Amino acid sequence: MSSYLEASARERLRRLCDAGSFEECVAPSERVVSPHLAQLDLPVAFDDGVAVGRARLDGAAVFVAAQEGGFMGGAVGEVHGAKLTGMLRRAVAERADAVLLLLDTGGVRLHEANAGLIAVSEVMRAVLDARAAGVAVIALVGGANGAFGGMGIVARCANAVLMSEEGRLAMSGPEVIETASGVEEFDSRDRALVWRTSGGKHRYLLGDCQAIVPDTVAAFRAAAIAAVAAARRQPVELTLDALEREQQLLAARIDAFGALHEPADIWATLGMANAAAIPMLEIDSFAAAAEAHRLGVK
Image (tube, rainbow, N blue to C red):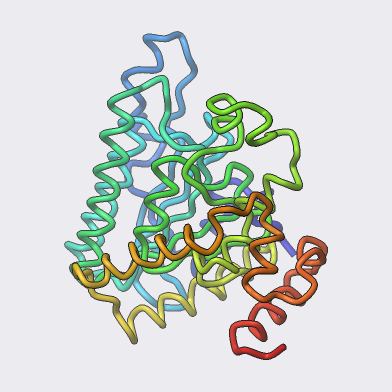
């Protein structure tokens, strides 16, 4: 089995999509690179750290984007963001069945400052425009860099988020929190704490991701196929009422968990049996336990 975590961006695309179906747009051969990095004597990548294009997923016409975590941690700059935005707009123009975002990123590329921030805001708007046009957007999170910063927000703008246990999803990364608030608030070297707080299992139990899968490209492919089919069967409209319900959900979380400092305490409060054992459960066993809990089986 091939690990999703260990694969490069293009390896993930090649194995996730139908064989031979990926057609890259703005390929490395076009050498469209960041206009900012060279000025800082920093290396550039001919794809600016993201591969975008059209493909087939179990026969469905999709557009796909895969961030390369090996280049600047998958961080978003001006060109990187423009490629994502252009791909989403092209998906709407061609009435694609769905868009898949393979996220592997620490967020905005600080070297590009405002250009990177603007790029991420444009990606967010393009995601919501795609959804409003009836094109489902599915985010996949299983890379070594997770999905943090503005791209963490982009993930939550999607129709569905698919994660592995190894994936992480949050607004601020562990090192950022530690730098801003001190090691007493959050110790970024405590890897078990990091994954308990932002990892796939925690996000699944809180309802921030819709499926949790083993760390294989095949598992992500199967989950993506199911998510695209579900989104096409039951499209979720973007309405003010829906946004207000989301806000009410977040407010309820603060009321229920605001005084808790340990994710395992949250799991216990949710009613999960033997919450302390959750980090040790194999993903299939964890998914079964979480599903039983969701159905009210004790």
